[in-house]
Length: 217
Image (cartoon, rainbow, N blue to C red; front, top):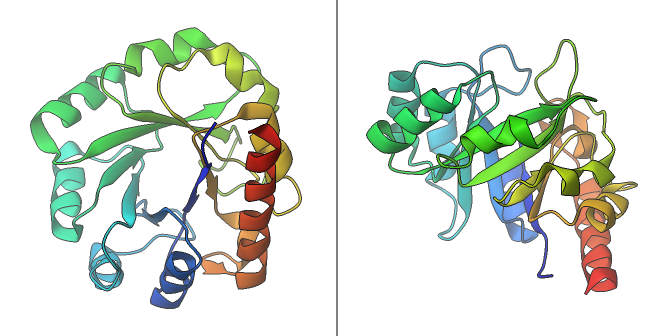
């Protein structure tokens, strides 16, 4: 297994983005869902993105938004990936992937007790990766809660897995060891408050991820 990639989601300011990139993070996530406490405007996201060095992946997070709006923001901000974190159908994803976007799709799923392989199969044709988050009755992400990572293997994703949901410096190593994801998505677990990242916590996440990678090599 190679090195687990690290995505920091919920970026709201230039300082956090620059800090994460300087520490070797692979991807930055910008949330365009208005109800999120970490939401940013396209204008603010673009201001941050244009100041990032090359080869840093930028991901836009959308929730049940019109394809035309997604397409407009992608092109305006110069995003590399779209992460769909709502109830978007397989047909929506196929249409967006084929007709609108100049970038690739990540489909997020909130894992429930009854989630299984049949939930993911209809999307495999249209998406480049699946992001697995924790189901929460009120929140679509950033809940700080985790799920049983050992279940990931049973989903037969056939696409790279990005593991999210309550990942912190204390548990990210265990999560990687149990799920062996392509990447981990870190958000609330490294924050002092919503939208503001803690450098020490991010450093520890990276350290624990690398230790887990080495142990699993």
